[in-house]
Length: 141
Image (tube, rainbow, N blue to C red; front, top):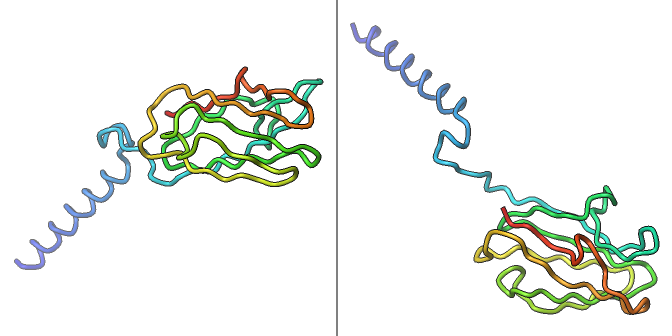
């Protein structure tokens, strides 16, 4: 008799585990992955225009990030660049300087508002502002 109840309990627990594993994030109340992503961006000259682009795909100029994600910008080998963020909640800073050939790593703040966040990147030696989506921007989802 005990074996019968034990078998029923094991089957019930197994079904519960299987049903939880097969649930989508939306079915669990819209939970998102808590694993932060890394986004590598570069400042480079594309068709005669300075742009902020995805380091792996220079045709991608729009970046979608989540709170807690890490964004890494790479400066050109021959130019210093300067950043101005309109909202300190976005990255925890208003301005940053990035020397030629170096990288800057910032984390998207947990208090950053969802939506569109434009920022400015000035390419010092070229005396020009970099474009992305004119100006560059991050979209927090």
